[in-house]
Length: 182
Image 1 (cartoon, helix red, strand yellow):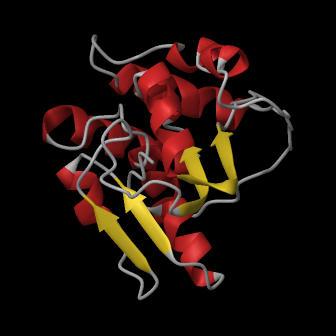
Image 2 (spheres, helix red, strand yellow):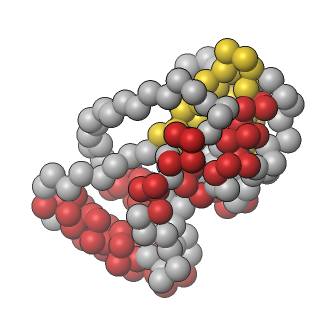
């Protein structure tokens, strides 16, 4: 749900899983790499157009905080098979070095004034009180990205809130190139 540019969808499909990616933003869907086991649909988390009890796993990578939480959770419960699972995943940025601190500065400098800031911090709260999901577990994993310049630009542009066109995007790209060169 909220598949964006399809990074997670592609990784699941590459492991042999059939994937139905839900993404309402046409430019995000168009940026996704096609895969024979993957299908990207124009829909929302609240109106998935998926049948009841038809899904083994619902994943939301960096997206749940964009949804209307309670209607979405009810919808997820309806489309999941009785043995199905829900996984809500976020990357929490940990500024551990000068490069990452500067990357954050470059990203947040590029944000339009209406972009969300800190919206995901309380996004899990509705799940804790949902009668549809009882055995909730929380896991934290450390991971590290090693990115070349195209990877750094792709990572930045995979964030739904960064500019995707115009002068703001060009400035972001220039700043990312300078940062990578350093």
